[in-house]
Image 1 (cartoon, helix red, strand yellow):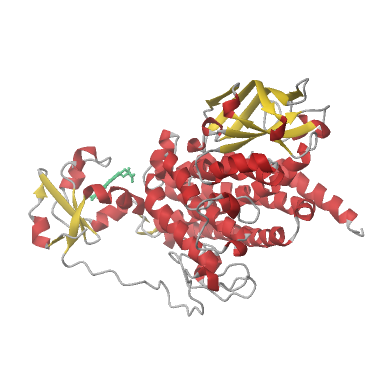
Image 2: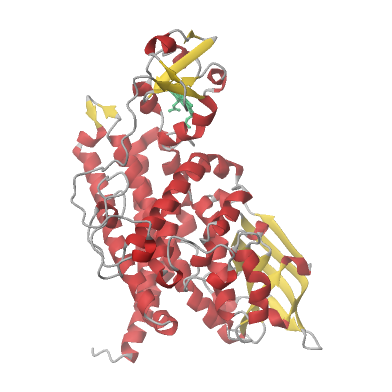
Length: 542
Ligand code: HEM
């Protein structure tokens, strides 16, 4: 915005028919906007021609400015200080700068503390953002983090509430996930460079690890919308890994480039109206045709994330007898015909496209079998660890969002003559949120490191229990933080949108995390059962 104005210029636009205000040194023309202003036009007319920064920040958060800037800003005050080159938020002496020159990355385990990054609100971001030493993160992670955050802050955050209400995210955002090369790195495997035309540039492929994947999910979750996160990685993150790991090469060569480049969408179809956590009892049937060339699929799937937009469905079907040994996984393509999808109305994650699917005599070539016939249960179980880790990452960032929003609000809202943050009862709420977030996040880092180091089978056996336990821990933490944040925001988090909008939305999203991917009850029971079983195999002495 190149135009500059003096205070006197702005002061001359002090009427309803020409209404300018200043916020943080920038000048906004609200003449035509005033009639649409949700807070009313009179309130704007009272500050016409004046610096209204104080009033603005009392009623809005930062995403409002980002959203309306292009439309309403006409320039800046001539007295507005020029932005400093690269602000250093705090004077923590950091030894290593976050260089985009990722090729020079320090190996994980030897990295020194990185530059402080973000707003430096204690516990608002993971500790490695605050120059804590970490064996897991190095310059490649820092560079990728900056890239994702800039995208989210500019192109996503200001519009998320709107998309949630519309129950849809523009298709261009998903395409951009592919164009940026992110999708090829979100599969719980090494980076799938061979299948993409535009691999990620900031991180050399051979240096890609699960912490890069983790931070993309984590940064996307700063939007405070489960619906948004599930829209862009929900179906993909659980539907695509079985294809990559168990699909036959000709199938991969044919469809994977389209998926990873963001042109085609894929989801995971396991849950049925009658089989949720009890996967072994699913009934969607796939019968081999007489010539042995096709499976004929008939059945229903329910609560399938992204189903309405998907071209491909990684589908659990019954090819054999009852129980887990009769289950297979098929890659069903919408273009085969016989696939119908309808959107389901749900409590939360509105923009994720939760779907009811019916398969009616769908003819699926045997080449689309993923893994071996009747051995699909193991594939599904392997996939669960990746799915649950994704849920944990999201829940813990959502918990941070609840906490961070609360800290910001508690520092501006005044009651009984003081700021909320000055009331011990509010600080206690924040403290209980922070301690649960940090404890859970540190366990998460440890488990991701174990996933990175162990082979897939070892990880499935040895980490299944702890990951299940942490999934329950993360969803309980999320529920707690959403509730406490809501108490801090009061009425603002009871109505939709506005300053408490993120908290209100996340509160509605909680159940979408506590139930799918293994409910809290099943996770906790499994965590002990499986851990005991594995420990026994490994020589536990009681
Ligand atoms: C660039 C200028 C402004 C824009 C783009 C803007 C935009 C908005 C929007 C979108 C809302 C709906 C709630 C939300 O999403 O946060 C809102 C609410 C509101 N605005 Fe503004 N506004 C501006 C300036 C102001 C100013 C200067 C004041 C006060 C003098 C003000 C007072 C309010 C109030 C009282 C509400 C209702 C808050 C509530 O529901 O709790 N706005 N504004």
